[in-house]
Length: 295
Image 1 (cartoon, one colour):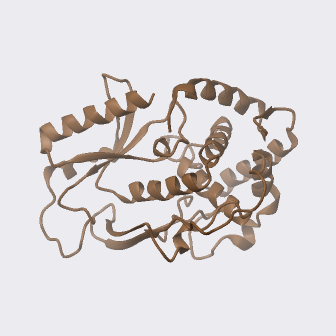
Image 2 (cartoon, helix red, strand yellow; image 1 turned 180 degrees about the vertical axis):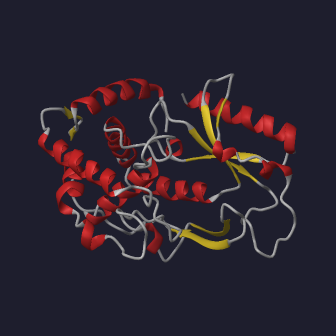
């Protein structure tokens, strides 16, 4: 699987460089980069513009090159040689920076990637992982689920807040532009490793407790910041943006009901993590395929 992904990225880079110039590079981001992807996951890819490493500075009045004329993000590109699909954007580097942050959390807590993968598979089994499927009411993105899981483990003392480190290991900025291109916003990116931070004693709680947290413990009415649009607020780590803003009250209700049901379903145990029967089937198949996967 890893070799197929690498080959797909090489093929995509070759096609882009042949058409638009050798300066363009492709950089994957998302769960495939920190070991939490499923075998069927697409590859999220950013095409890096060498002339705009810090994004779309308002002082830069030069016309954008032809590569920006194609709205790659509207399409899922499939490599005919490998059969793998890519979701592609042009120079939207914040996704790559978010990935670097999450990867650092996974390095800080090695079981985290598998923990996130298990939860994502359960959400998918409940048909609540459709953030942008045409004709389907929007539900949770894998990114939102990942951020929710990190925040949950931070609340229990198993993860630090890497963005509060006084000694950053990664620091940059990026000028993000609106979809119309009319508005430019500077986004500062900074995080450390919190090497001196000590986690809570003991092993990670079973996934059943994650279900219980979102079903019963989390106070949605009290904890949701009122200045953000949406029935559930999941803040992006670097931007003032709710990544779950499209989720309706109905979908949130289904999510909470599913979590409540999962708490009651304690007959299926997989590696000390309790999940529903349908998710267990998905997990068994995914882990069988993942034996050859190297995060």
